[in-house]
Amino acid sequence: MASEDLKSQVPVEENGTKEEEKNGNLEASVSKENGESSDVFSVIQEEEGEEEEGETKEATKKKKKKNKSKRKKELAKQTDPPTIPVVDLFPSGEFPEGEIQQYKDDNLWRTTSEEKRALERLEHPMYNSVRQAAEVHRQVRKYMKSILKPGMLMTDLCETLENTVRKLISENGLQAGIAFPTGCSLNCVAAHWTPNTGDKTVLQYDDVMKLDFGTHIDGRIVDCAFTVAFNPMFDPLLEASREATNTGIKESGIDVRLCDVGAAIQEVMESYEVEINGKVFQVKSIRNLNGHSIGPYQIHAGKSVPIVKGGEQTKMEEGEFFAIETFASTGKGYVREDLECSHYTKDFDVGHIPLRLPRAKQLLATINKNFSTLAFCRRYLDRLGETKYLMALKNLCDSGIVQPLPPLCDVKGSYVSQFEHTILLRPTCKEVISRGDDY
Image: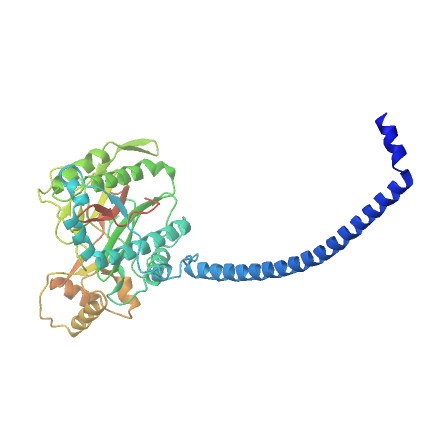
């Protein structure tokens, strides 16, 4: 009974009052301490809050500055239709590389050769110029593909394309501009046709159009073409020339014989057939049309890349540019000159030839100033304000100063498709300069 004994010794009331007093004092002291500590804590909280607010303000300021700097760093986007010069889209001044392909077999050592890399570094400014021209080509053809439709007047089509090139390349005399007239050859016409002033030809749903145009920076030419056909019936014909061109690019390389490239192209091309209006045609390579080497201000620099077997034994060399182009035909596979001439070019190797006609001298001065040895067409002369020049132009052609380039046609009723890319045989690798997402 220990508990009972304890109660009897300590009075309940006293114990209660003492404990209450103790508890009361304890609570008061705790509350005072809590009050003081809470006041201090609230002050600390306020100070910390102010510090946090200051930090967040500083952080937001920094973020705003970063966002502004990011906005400045972001590349400008091309408008639709394109109007911003490509130079403004790449403020660093470095333009994107084309597709890189490695050389085959005996030339694989070039990939890691320090000497060859050093050669490339020396040529970088020139590479960058031709890449700028290629970027213009990619953006212009992307836009043209988005607006091409049956019913377009061919003259409007060409002028739209050429004016877009002039804007994007920042046309500047012979330093930057159009490399040659826009070829928009239809159906059996394989190449070298563009409308002369007053031509009323209209693009039709059942047409097969080869759109071949070129750009240049400092005379470094990008020559690239594709085919447009609205009727899906022609798809195998387009596929034949596209795949043949890709094969030609793949087979090209330093020390490769031109005839070997032609043989590979023909093998792929003639493995296709196309059914047109219920009749099946074997696709043929046009045997008298070729790809070609390209030089500064010289669209055909001397070497020809055949698209059939049995061509030249000449070899491709390091540093050369080539236009690899193939033509697939449902006709005879052989072209001849026909129709009204629109394309002309001043002979690259012509020396001084005396001229008797003052008008011919005047026209030659215009050609030298605006085109030099780059190809041109009658529409370009009209645009420069030249009038009544046909007699003078004929005199320049007869004298051998200017070469006429008439349209090249297969048999009537046939269809021809074309694809073309410009490649550069760099010391370490092969660059398909004009390659894009489209082809």
